[in-house]
Image (cartoon, rainbow, N blue to C red; front, top):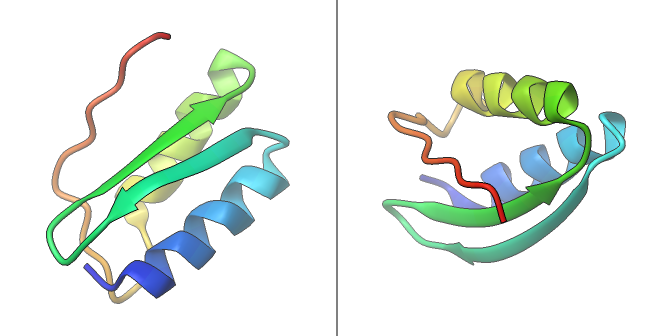
Length: 66
């Protein structure tokens, strides 16, 4: 994973979907972030991340309610 690319992508998508986002960690193998907002928009964010930026491949997404 290219952290700079993924972080920029995630922040942009969250902003477009009017979601609150907090980047917690990112390294070559994973990223951890917290996203808050309407459930349908969080679903859309998850789908966007699964498609991801061209230089980051997202293989698995874990989701939990806070």
